[in-house]
Length: 233
Ligand code: OAD
Image: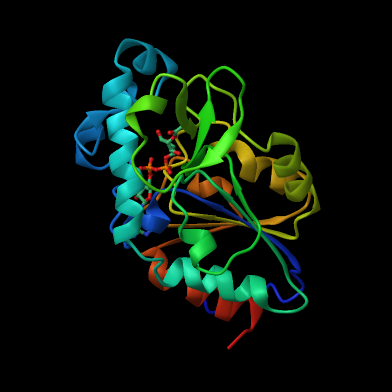
């Protein structure tokens, strides 16, 4: 990483996944033999699951929402937040994560492509509201988590494509790159002329297709990468 110099980069996009929040204490999806907090993703993160067992799904997201009060942004979220506050840089985070750790880490421009735990949506009118607690019992039949479940369309698609096309540098952090369309976004950035970098605990199936790929914990690699490649102290 020492020799990597990307001083020209001004428009920087980070695509983040569960790995960036792992050191804050939030479990990733593909830990624990494919179980997410003891549930298969199909059991709690599909529209069919919500139809079949709404109470299980609501309870699951209640617990995830409450968990946010117990976790804090880690060094990786904060390093991106600090960079975003520097003059001369335009930083956008595209995240697959539904937590709010990027916002709390100081980043103002965060596009949650898979929705947000702290938002709920009316199933009839599509109105959204913020909710920081458990979903009240009387709301449970008409409101659902504003989360993108499997089979549903990602959020902010047009804006995501626009920032990627304008990016000088596209950095992926902490994602297994197994879920599309997120996993293919770096290819769009690369074709549009951006330098692409992967920072992940381990190699992924697409590591060799990035311009650069580094392995390590996000709390270490993200700040090291920002300091060394952009020449920032
Ligand atoms: P995954 O659980 O699939 O992948 C997390 C990645 O982070 C793995 O490749 C880990 O090696 C890596 N990792 C773990 N700890 C790390 C650390 N401390 N530092 C750096 N990397 C670390 O999570 P996602 O790729 O985010 O979708 O999963 C993508 C989507 O699949 C999720 O948004 C969710 C899920 O099913 C929906 O719910 C629609």
